[in-house]
Image (cartoon, rainbow, N blue to C red):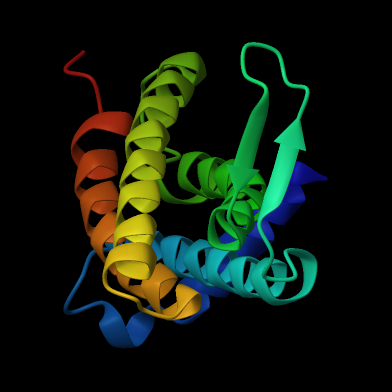
Amino acid sequence: MPNYFVRLITAIIDFFYPPFRRFIPIQTFRYIACGGGNTALDIVLYAISYYLLADREVIHLTNLPLVNTIAVTPHILAFIIAFCVSFPTGFFLMRTVVFHDSNLRGRVQLFRYILLVAACVFLNYIFIKLFVERFGLQAVIAKILTTCIVVTFSYLAQRNFTFKKSAA
C-alpha cells in the first residue's frame, strides 16, 4: 500500500510539472509541492487546534516528574498538535517522493531530519512566542509569518544536509 501511495502522490505532482519544466528541476518542483502541501496541512491543523481544541485558554499540566506544573498557552498547544502530524508526514514525503534518490541510509536521513526538525521546532517556538507575546500579533498570523521564516531555513538545510547525496 505505501508504495502505491508514493507512486500516486508522485504521479499527481508530476502531472502539474510540465509548465514549470523550463524554470525549475523536477526535484525542486516536488519539494515545493510536498513541502507546500505539508505546510498547508500544518497551518490548517494549527488553526483547527487553536480555535477548536485549545479553546484559547491556558492549560496547566500538573504533577509532572521533575516539575510541579507547566502552563501551556493555546498557541503553543496548537503548535504541538500540528507538529505531531506534520513531522512524520513531512519526513515520509521528503524521503519517498522528493529525495528518493539519496544514497544516504534511512537512519542517517532520519537522524539528520530529527536534528533539522529540532532546530525548526526551536525557531517556531521562539518566533511564535515573539510575534504573539511581544508584538501582539494574532496567533494564526504569527504562525504564518513564522512558517515563512522556518520554511526558508528548512529548504536550505534539507537540500544541503538532511538528504544530501554522499560523495560515494
